[in-house]
Image 1: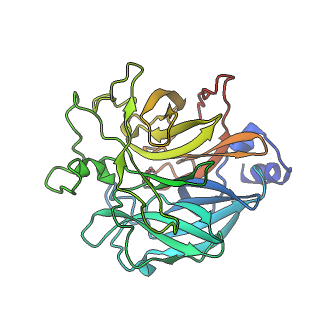
Image 2 (image 1 turned 180 degrees about the vertical axis):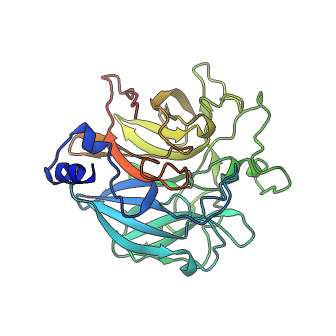
Length: 339
Ligand code: FUB
């Protein structure tokens, strides 16, 4: 199967569906792929999954990753290169454990790698590291971004040049512990608001020109149903769980995210990057494995979804990244992919 996939990979620019559902790389386990195009080339910033023997629990302790490898390819279906270790947890001065889903951006001639990791008090914060190359090595700033919280940074640059970071994830991602604006570690780790209370929204903040800090206080993003009511915490087929991504299409902002314990990728749209967003529907049904995490890019007039599943290992904490085409209907709505 691997040889067949490699043969397909060599066939330049193939959109063969079988190839597109193959793991992009089989030598290491990778997850949470944040894809970007820099200088016409596709770069993927994934988590690097490893076996650590940590027990599997709702807090995500079994995701105990320690470094990042960046992948690149010239085209969808092209050869995938693993550029080796780009940042190691031992080189992040404030880090404790669990290097989770990263993202990247390019501005001012510099590449920025944004990453969530627990600090030495076991609280997730988001850090930033810089490099002159999209593949690193990256040098981490001495402290986390002031005001940052939780996990899964997704960095989006709008058509006017403003850059925003979306972030957050509940349960092991700790976002539910920030409801008062301060971290509250007193409650059980997976405790959400009551089922009939508003769900916990992802957070957003505009980045400063230097890309190393927030230009404004972090705000909660509201996700509403078609009647304009905030999605409830008990609505776990639709409420935000983790893994936000942002893209813009025909002037509209598309917030895409995972529903976590119901394993869906869903989307909501708005006329503003701050929202409120209105829930629209599911665009990907559950993959193999507990987590589902994605990114979306446009390349040569087509849209692609990068995602992961557990095809190679069958273990939820040892994942592999993949890519497939994301199609839209004429009204801009996303077609549903069944992996
Ligand atoms: O990879 C660790 C965590 O699993 C990510 O931060 C989440 O989005 C989920 O994919």
